[in-house]
Amino acid sequence: METSLLSFSSSKFPSPSNPTLSLKPNPNPFFHFRSSKRTKPSPTHIRAAISRTKKEETVETVKTNLDNCFLLAAIKYQGLTVKQFQDLRRTLPENTKLLVAKNTLVYKAIEGTKWEALKPCMKGMNAWLFVHSEEIPAAIKPYRNFQKEKKLEENDFTGAVFEGKFYGPGDFKALESMPTRAEIYAKILGALQGPSIGLVSTLQAPARDVVMVLKAYVKKLEDESGQ
Image 1 (cartoon, rainbow, N blue to C red):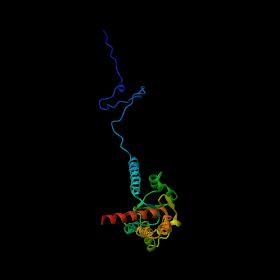
Image 2 (cartoon, one colour):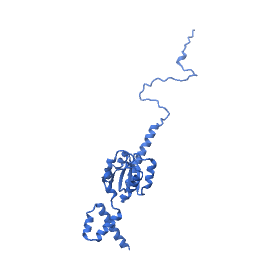
Image 3 (cartoon, rainbow, N blue to C red):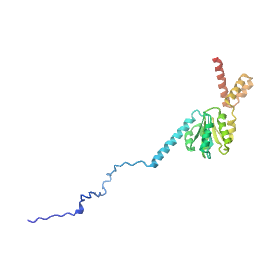
Image 4 (cartoon, helix red, strand yellow):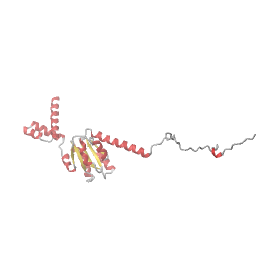
């Protein structure tokens, strides 16, 4: 009886020393090999996330400063050095806040509010002055002095909003010449204690002046009743 031997080509089987298998494309489209390694976020994605967070924080900062704000003004910021900006901040009263922010972010914060009237200022580079006091002239004066001292004629106010009204660069004299609270109080009290014609002329004054006068009169009555 003869025995026939079957021989197999060694190329059809991987050798022990080289166990690498060559995988053919999987005909099943619903089956995929997945890598065990997780893809790390790229530096670009990280920078974008940080940038988005900073923008959101800036918008919230602007909104926060609008609380109890009486006047919001834009100042042409281009050309100011860091030192000049720091010096300017030190000259401002405590009830004012100076902030540098992109126009788009500021507009996002004021959109749909009375401060939206500041839209004409949304161009160029601006610093934003938030005044948390009724003493508008006193809040503006420090910058005027700084501007004159440093010879920064080009870095002027580009506009402001007060009581919902927009004031352009040429209208700032009206803001800077407003009477102080003490002056208004004295005027109102004098009108109330004087002839009726004085009261009539006072009531014909701007609404802001009348309101402040009435507040002064009420305060005077309260002080007298407390004595």
